Length: 115
Image (tube, rainbow, N blue to C red; front, side, top):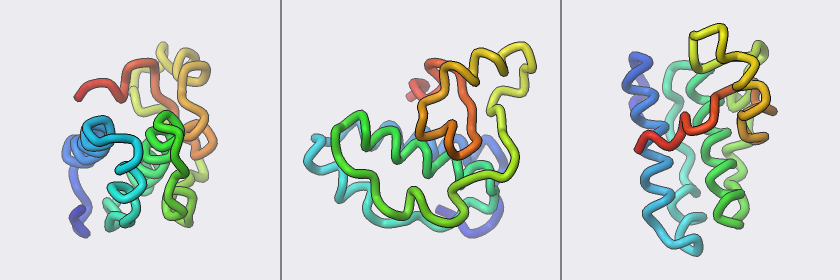
């Protein structure tokens, strides 16, 4: 990942690429794929989102999440609703995977399926 702060669309593409890559490998290969911590995105929000997505993907595959996904910089001090549509915030509170919600990141069902 780039060290320069990305625009939000680029950062979102990086996160969605992690999901695509993780779903394309056998579960036994997933820990090796996720082992190396990526460089910070330049956005605390997207760094937390990436940590949550990696932990979520790992749990779904039945493998341990890498330690970096729970490390410093992977949690927000203030909640972030990825959708800026206020009427979706209540749904996101209920539907967000636990790995994202504990990081202060909230998404609606299917938000990570756009790959």
